[in-house]
Amino acid sequence: MAAASILGFLLLFSAPLGAQVETQPESRPKPVITPIQVPNLSLGVVIFPNGKAINLSVGTGSSAYRNPNDLPGRVWLLTDRGPNIECGEARRILGLEGDQACAGNRMGRIFPLPGFVPSIYAADIGPDNTARISVYLPLKGKSGKPLSGRPPQVNGRYESAYAIDGKALPPDPSGVDPEGLVRVSDGTFWIADELGPSLLQVASDGTVLKRLVPQGLQNDFKDADYEVVPSLPPILRYRALNRGFEALALSPDEKFLYAMLQGPLANPDIETARRSRHVRLWKIARETGEVVGEYFYQTDDINSYTGEVDGRERVQSRVLLSEMAAIAEDQLLVLERVDRHARFYTVQLTDENRVPRLLDNPEYGPGFEWMDAAQLALRGVLPLTKTLVLDSEMTPGLPAKIEGLAITGPNEFIIINDNDFGVDGVRTQMFRVTLPQPLIR
Image (cartoon, rainbow, N blue to C red):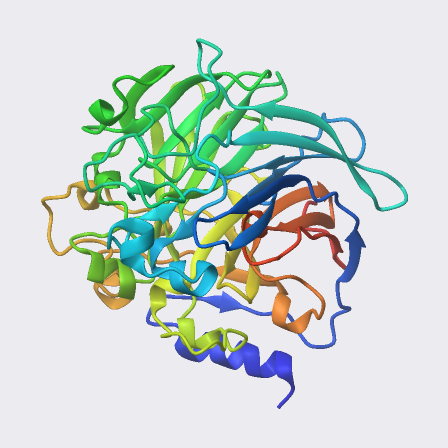
């Protein structure tokens, strides 16, 4: 059996009741992959107390976006919260034991540059397939003070932050962890943020105008340097650590935002988030912030990701939703991945994929994330049908940890990896993907 047929078999066989995954025939022409030279922007060398030195560079690949009205060749890029190292990885990366690095807190993060400012960049891609940085917009509050990537509170809902000397860092009520980006034709931006999770409206100069947060969590941001609006569903308070909003899309008429979590909610507990395949996708009116629809996206079984062979436990929560882009209203291109293996699917939002408002109630049990697909089907809720467009395992040369996706033409999109600021020596890589048939008709 050929590789593509094996992939289709694995996907279909592993799909529970109600799930539909459509693959493309083997005879179809293959996508053309073109590398684009992208600058790696140095942040300098950080030397840790034990003498370990790490050469850091800006990670511009957390998201990518192109508005049809942008200058020719322009793609907008986004950093996340800045260089950080999981405390549980301190020994591997830094040669430090956990108690040396994070006071024994394995769930914390080390911030080598705690003053790093999350930022938006514009890259202009020329006919020579070289991207040149032309715009730099560091995020700032209404006072003009730069934002940081440190969490807003130390209350158990956010990862604790530590400096390189092991001391706890103060929280930043305005702190953000940007992961998704769109740009409206009027020059403003919207950013999907993992902390909260939340959605930020950003002016054309990088000033955060307002932050939409889950109802009931507004006090976590009470001293923020911008307006805080508690308009998002309260069920989002069950966000698992580092699994907030990751993917953001803008409808072609710019009336709606589509926001998707990186993974399942911890509803009712973190073990549910580790094993569940059910991820919520929201459709939100851009002008009012009103949620007008919620949909059921089901991730592929972790065991179908045959490219992920690294000795770690193959737990379902390693499958992540990293990016999406709107092809038409309620039609999206979604990037689903593990660290070394990415798949790109198109989905069409329909009424049968809607999550009932009842399942937004944290008191309702069993919860959406806890139920299996058969139980949800009995309630009339079916997962989105996914049509495979590109599989990185079938496309040699693509990097690990692809997080940015920007549609640049009817049959073309740009992808970029998140280099994690060079902590492990990874460089930023960008590619143009040209499909044999158009996504946009």
